[in-house]
Image (cartoon, rainbow, N blue to C red; front, side, top):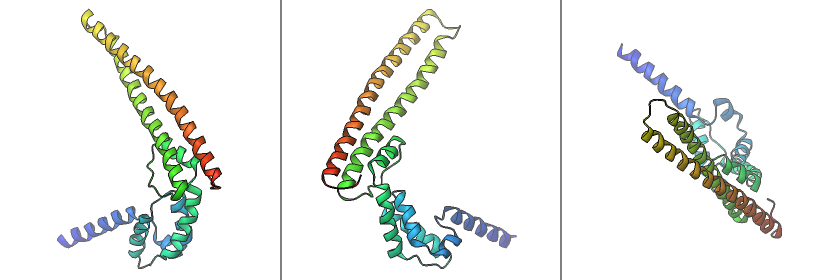
Length: 195
C-alpha cells in the first residue's frame, strides 16, 4: 500500500513538473533553439528565461544550444523593442523586464512607464465606479433613516467628485503619454534608430 502511494506521489510530482515546463519533450527534441529564442525575444523575456528551457529539456536528457538561442532571442528583441509595443504592454498592465538595451531601451522604458501609469489610473477609476454603484444602491435602500440617507448621499457625492478629478487626470496622462511618445520617436529618428 505504501509503495502504491509513493508511486502515485511520484507520478503526481512528475505531472506538476511537466505542467510547469516551458518546452515539451517534442520541442526539446526538435532542437530549433533559434526559433525558441526568437519567440522569447519577441515576448520581451529576459536573458535568464533560457534557464527555464534548460531545466525543461534536461528532464528529457536534451541540452539546449545557448548560442543559437541567444542569437534568436536578439532577433526577437528587435521585434519587441518598439515604442508601439511599449505603449501596448504598459496600457495592458504588463511588466517590462528591461530587456531592450541602449537608446531604444531608454525610450521603451519611458513610454512603458507612462502607459503603465494610465493602466493604474484606469484600474483606480474602475474600482471607484464599483464603489459608486454600491453607494447608489445603498442610497436607494428603503429602510434608511433620513440621517443615514443624507450621509450616504454625501459619500456618493464625494465619490463622484473624486471620479471627476481622476477623469481630468486621465485626460492629462493621455496627453502626457502622447507627448512622451512623440518626443522619443523624434529622439530616436534623429539618432537613426528604428522605433
